[in-house]
Structure formats: structure tokens, C-alpha cells
Length: 281
Image (cartoon, rainbow, N blue to C red):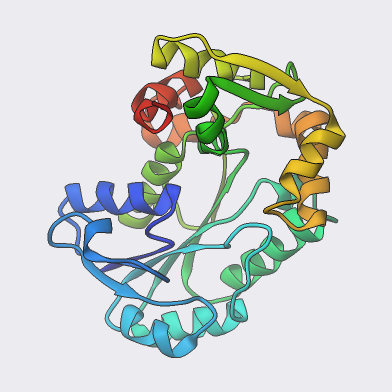
């Protein structure tokens, strides 16, 4: 049995679908999961990564665990407690969705430090392990849904600064390979898209998918900061804006790991926009 935490998120939902389509026995779990969130036949149990008691029935009898570090503002149990519960349930392999920031922003409490602590716990757990370190997600463009629907407009800072954003569906496929196949134990995969794309180019890709013009408005850093502070803690906002506006060479580097694992190039942002265009209509 394979357990997927964060099963209603951008990566977890896709991962559950990939595993179920491959005929795997899957338990999908998240805080508010319901039957409508999973394919037919997939076991789903509500649990919370801050509540050890809720995790035990999820992990009992499991062979492998897909664990999410939870992002820069997540609140989790001690990772050692989560992993102890996993091992007690029978888990022998852990695939961790971490962050590129562990390597590129190690001194950032929001993007590097917390995820590093979870990575360390996984490596020390005594299970087989694989760590996934994606960069920025293509699905962050869902933040533009409301403005595109309302007035066919996208506002973003640093209009012409490119990053190799990764399609979450590619992360899910790499995660599925690491859960199901041998040869990935002890590996750290840096996951990126196939090339740099800028906010202006991503807005144009959404317009192309819609078949309608979408106006792009470049925000100042202060304008973007004020908007982001409505739903992110300040340290997360500041580090995020620095990555978006002044990325390090390592944050702009295109990694070969998706292609090495999947045998194909990672999907471009335009592909993501075509598949998810209904959200923007």
C-alpha cells in the first residue's frame, strides 16, 4: 500500500491519479479529503500532520509514504514523530516533497531551514528514501484566476525575469516512479521545467490557451508585496520576492532530472495552461 499525504494539493491529487491508474493500492490523506477528491476505489482517510493519532490508521500496513514538507509556512509534528509513526505502520520507503530552497536559500527560515530539518529526519529515519526538490510551480498561476476571469488581466512583478517553473503533474510522475520503482533510493532530484519562462510569457500562454487577449500589468515590488501579505507571512513574502526578482544562477538552472527519471522532457508552462485553462474561463 502506498500512502499519499497532501492528497488534495496540486501534486498530491495528480499523484493519487497516476498511482491508481497504474493499479496500485493507494491511501490518500489530507485534512479535509472526501470521496469526491479521489478516483473510484482509492481509500481516503482524513488526517493531519500535526496530529499523530490521526496518522496511525493511515499508515498501518503501508509499504511506502509520499510525505510533503508542507511549504514555507507549514505547521507539522516533529518530522521524527511522523517518521516513527510511519515505520511503526510498516513503511519501508519514503519519498519527500521538499524544496529547491534547501540548496539555494539554506539560511532562509521560510524556504530552506524548515525543509532541511525534514530532509535530515528522512535521511536519518532508517527507511529507504528519495527527496524531490522542485523550484517554482506552474500552478502558482492559479493566483491569477480571479483577475483573468473578472477582467482578462494579470498583474505580477519582475515581468521579464525568467524561472524554469515546473508542472506539478511532472512532480507527481517523478514521485510515482520513486514510490514504485527501484533505483531511486538515496537520490535527491532537483525538478524544473524545460526552460526559463517570465511572468509576461506565462500571461501570454494563458491568453493563447483562452484564445482571448489578456492584459499584463507589471507591478512594483512594493505593490506585489502588499498583495502577497494578505495571505503569506512576511518572511515568506520577502524571500519569495527576492527569488522572483533576483534569482540565483542555481534557481534559473534547468535540471535534467525529470527527463532522466521519466524518459521525456518536462512539460512547458504552455502545456500546463492548455490543460488547466478551464479554471481561467
